[in-house]
Image (cartoon, rainbow, N blue to C red; front, side, top):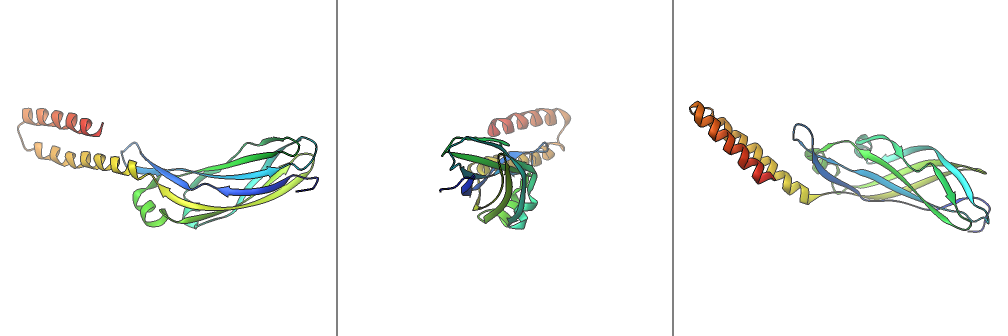
Length: 186
């Protein structure tokens, strides 16, 4: 650890945890945030102030995950590290809305790897490469709740049954069905 320049002493990624949500049309979708962290060490007797610039990814595997990421990497650009101190830089990037089929057939349970390049610019310029890997996992408790929404979707089929009844029965049956569906979902 002796030296005069900033050193990267660790790089790791968290498991990509995908949790459920619904879009405007009530389709079940999964979203998550890919998070990796670089641990930097200042071996000098001076405060090191600088910024992270030029963050770019060389490779994310599997490629199917790379296709599901949106936007640029987010991170704290300004860094101030105490003498003989450590600083953790978080790098984060969101996923798109992933449908259940794609998650279950292409992503769930896979190990992913991120190779990330970034630069520190300050009293000196240093380029670092971080490589980390983790698992893709999902929120199964929320998936159970989504089944209730599917039941609500099945109840809509019952509403179609009421269409053949007289108009007053349609209105009463439709209102009670909607109230019942909201109570079961809520």
